[in-house]
Structures are given as structure tokens and as C-alpha cells.
Image (cartoon, rainbow, N blue to C red; front, side, top):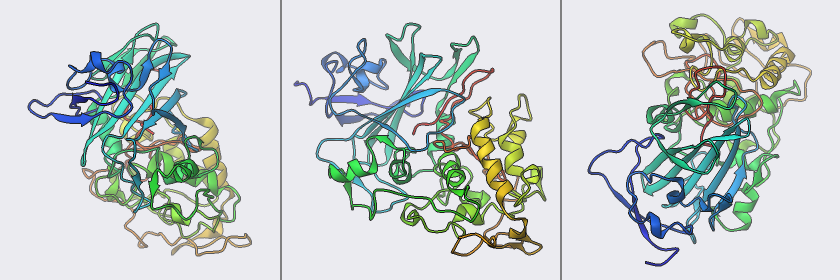
Length: 434
């Protein structure tokens, strides 16, 4: 068996690598590391990070051939964790961008996300497309001196600050990733096309002929609503809430909430945003979920009375965590900087945007486009009134973070991938698989 071409059998059913007996998938490796031969016997999932194909030399932190690093323009807030992200696309294959909102990745695509806290590596997550409709997943926990990373089923481990870090389980990861048809969250058209993306960007994908069809633009810009503060707020909601939970994908955890926060990349040419779904389904919209019945997601000019602000600036413990903070999992620390940006945006909205009948476009601003019209009786249903329906909670990472946890409805969602993880103590929580 030669280097660069060997079959490795892998089965993963969750971020924690839970094994389902009887299911095996043979996957042809592309750009295998020097550990290929010693990993030939590995099964479901590989027991060591060496066998995932990420490194050519773990001790020297040398990446394997074909592995590329990237940073989304708006990384997900993960309670202060430092993150690195890597992708390996099969040689000769392209990403199918026929639907700009739902990219389809070629068979064999691998994505890794590494979480560090206080300079100490905590975990590295793997997503590997092993069949046309299945992504195998696993999480690898690093030892004390960052020399060995072994497969973990998830759970709490000591963190660098003396607290507890939570490695997500499979169900926790699913809560966020199921909102994307092809599962990946932060490697998408908006995240790679906005200013600030680093490593491999949307332009790089086009220049290197790694995507088809070619997007109309590789440089995206979020317009304004007359406040001058809409762009970072909408980018944050897209990354932390919309990519995973709050979108129109029927698999999304918060699909039934009617709060659509994912941005359409084909509209990001600098035009006014007043008609965008994230504006129309938040400003002035009344929540029907029993827990927050009668409250409005965003009250123009009044952050203190906006449910969104209440939930993203609160962190709780105990039984009430799912109803008092967003997200209900994956965060113990408020992202004050980004939360302040959301507050400033809402405070800058003219109160005249909302009338007894709902909302209307702000006046006096260079906005263009129509205004939001979401109201008590207005356009899409404000929320699913059934408390047992899918609506978890989301978190406000503010600034623009990366992808999602579920959101109970009314609040801002974190965008799951915060990646599913959930830290128990005051330390770092976990982030999503960008």
C-alpha cells in the first residue's frame, strides 16, 4: 500500500465518536500524512489524531500535505477560547455552490477545529464526509503537554485556569450542525467572502478553481439600515444564530421559531438591509413562546426592553439556564464587547420604526429598500407557540461569531456550534465547528 492512497475504515456518529455496530465506511484518503501506514488498522473512529490525516508530524505541529488553514471573517464566540481551523479538499474535486446558502462538499472532505484555552490545547474536532449523505465526526482530547490527542466521547476536563472545560458529545454537536444540509458551518460563502476572512478565502476558492459555479462576487459587503451599525450586528446574528439554528432548513433546531437570521450571500453587495429576513423577523416581532409570551425580540431604540438583549447578556446555572440565557448551552461567559455592539445598534434605531401595527423603515437615513413589517399579526409567524417544539436557546456572541446553538425563540441564538460544547464552571466553553 502506497503513501497517499490507502483505504481507512471509519465510523463516527457524533463529536464524541460514538460507535454504531455494523456500520462501516471505506474512504479513500487524499494527501495522507506520514502516519498512514501505522494507522491502516484503525477503525471507528481513529483512536489518535495522527490517524485523521491532519498532521505530518504531531510533535512539530507540521500539517499534512493538502491541509489548509482558514479563519472566518466573523469567528464564533467561544468564551475566550483560541481556535484554529483546517480543511482538506480531495484532489481534483470542487465544492458545489449551486445553492449559495447550502454548499455541497465533495466526498472525502475533512475539516478540523482546534480549541485552546490559556495557551493549552484542549481538543481538536474532526468532520469527515465519508458518504454522500454522512459526515463522520470525532473529538480528540489533548494531554497535558500537547503531544498526544486521543478520541474522546465528550465530558468535562480540567482547564488551564483551574476550571472545567466541556468537550461536546454527539447530541450536543448535532443540535447545531443539523441546521446545515451538508453540516459544515463556518466554511461557507458569507464567512469566507466578508472582509476579514483569512487563510483560504472565497476568492482563493475561485482563483484555484475549487468551487463551481463561480459566485458573482468574491468580496461581500453587508449594507446598512440607516443606523450606521447594522452590518456587524447582522454578521453576528448570521454566524452565531443563522448558519445553524435560525434558518429555513427544516433540520435546524429553531426552524419552527420563524426567526430567520441567516444572510443570503447573493444580496451582500452593500444594498440596504431593511428587507433582509434578519431584520424583518426580529424588529418589533412579538414572541409567542410561553416563557417569553408578549415580549418583543427587538424594540427599536430600547435595548432594555428587547428580549434579545436580556438573553445574550445573561449567564445562568441550574435548571433555569435554558430559559434565562442564550445560548442555553455552550457559554458561561458573556461576550461583553460584541453584546455592546448589538445594544448600540438597537439603541440607534428610531423608535418610529415600530408602530402599533408593527415596524416601518427608519426615516432620515440613507437606507433604501423597504422596512421590516414583522408584527403581532405580521409576516412570518413570530414563534412556535408550542413549548415542546424545537427552539433551544442561542447566544449572543456579539460581533460576529461563528455558528450555532439552538435558540429558544425570541432570543439570539448562538449559533450552535458554539459547537455544541458546554463548559461547566467559569472557564471556557466550547465553540462550534466553523
